[in-house]
Length: 149
Image 1 (tube, helix red, strand yellow):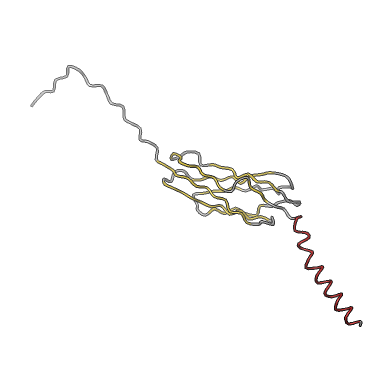
Image 2: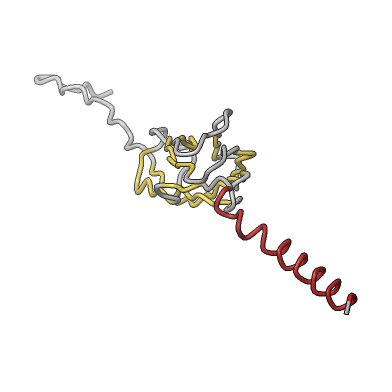
């Protein structure tokens, strides 16, 4: 009889321990972005390629952004340096190099201590060349007669 009680106590202990992480799941930080994609549409060469992805910590513990990594060197992302407390908002600042011509689609991977630890952001658009400036044309001298040799 004692063996059955001991076995039941061990099973109950394992059951309670396995349930513990799921009951604490709602206490972790949670990163919630307003938008995870931004379309610049068509922009001119050397135009402003900056954008901010705003987010909120909707969890119950401080959110720490551990890293931001872009898919290309032409896209630079900047993360907040301080922890974001529950209920606070912050942003990931992204700059695309608009000196490069053509269609682009770049991703930024954000890693954090949130329960949804890795989030992928995207910027896209098309960079077109600036129209060439026209050289001013000098007015024609009226009454000018060319001399023949």
